[in-house]
Image (cartoon, rainbow, N blue to C red; front, side):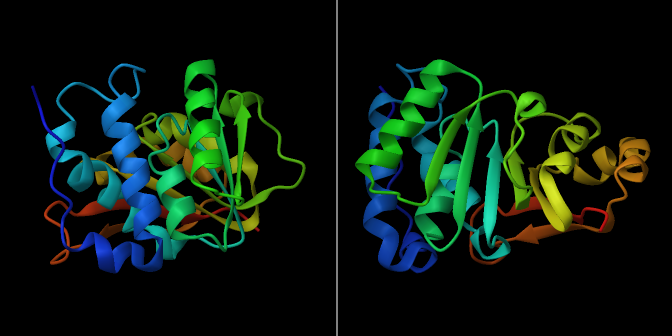
Amino acid sequence: MTTLEREPAVAASLFGEHLDRARSFTAALAEEGETRGLIGPLELPRLWTRHILNSVIAAPLFHGRAADIGSGAGLPGIVLAIARPDVEWTLVEPMERRVAWLNEQALSLGLDNVTVVRSRAEEWSPQEPVDVVTARAVSALRTLIPMTAPLVRPGGELVLFKGRGAEAELDAAQKQIRRFGLTGIEVLTLGEGVLDESTRVVRAVVRA
């Protein structure tokens, strides 16, 4: 039987006054995540390191109204909503059982800054374009950019979580980058010297 990873000391500084909510969410995910098909059976020993901290380290990049596409278990959406209660979050997820989980967590954690929408990204049309869109472990950039860029206001941003292959994905997505007029594209490595596993995000501005 696998056991939940011990909470890393750095979690306290990354979540600050919101640490208790982060602990509650992590505990709920550890208890129910596998049986509800939210996380795999091997994730408990690295849940904090690979998922919770990997998500929260990007919290300073968000502002205004943000959307998490394919929110799934709430990684990064719920984690970021905990860390940034000043940001208005919409979590977009097509699967009913995951939508139920996200709604349960938003309610139990008292996240008044979260709205959950059951929809595919391609079919969701926000009342007003958002300031920032994020996604984690959804698809390659050449597929993800056409799904996310239309949701962002002119001059808004994409902050897309990626792995070590981020640069290669950018190379393969040049057609989509030109189509949506993305500028200021950069691959940011977050958490070096702070986290055991750093986080990579692709950040870009959508054509104004």
